[in-house]
Length: 256
Image 1 (cartoon, helix red, strand yellow):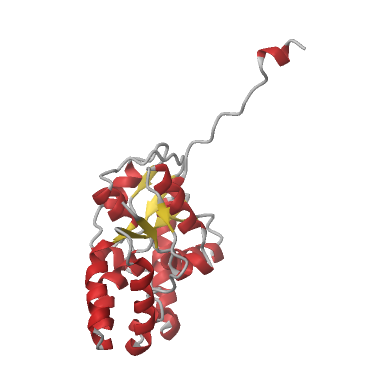
Image 2 (spheres, helix red, strand yellow):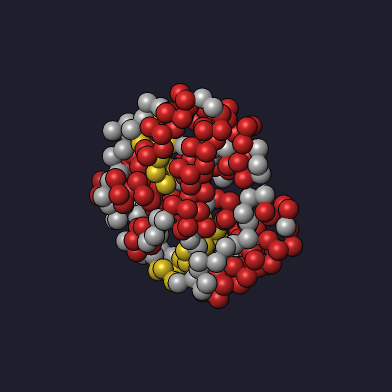
């Protein structure tokens, strides 16, 4: 199977550890991951703000960059949701039958990371080790647009050393919402404040989610509150492994 990574804009520009961890994880699971260098944005910011015509070249670039791969893995429910639900709209808007066909053929091969691991690879135990208390925030797009369901929790529950605690009001939005946070800053901060409070109530050391955008928003609030809670992408935790034991002196060296 030919598998490609769609790193996402935030992963490329601001939070590279998430796509890096995705590659380490998939390679450990026996998947040879390609990174098409022609990839850019998924186009969601343009579509969400009504600039569908401007999104056409972006969708065309995506379709060309990933056309030859059997699966495209995206470590973001938001971007995967945009590709699966918005690209067809943009392609039809373009009036280009070739782009419509390309999107129709490619879209079913696009997977959010946990979908790919659980549904395609058939795994829930990825051999991870993370000895910390964790709470999980199910992001809006992964929860409502993609319907990833309990896949992330199934994976987290199999991580050795990890204690998973429930997040109160977990299904409520964190308030980021892309441009929503810019256009409605006060409401966004209030919603994020509620989410941060719920995270603190769990007593968890780490907040985990599948979208860097939500982690940036909630994590920023938690940092300003000096909560001590670390925000981490799910891929980083699943890629974590128990460190190798330190090598002691050999029997020969001890006799010298």
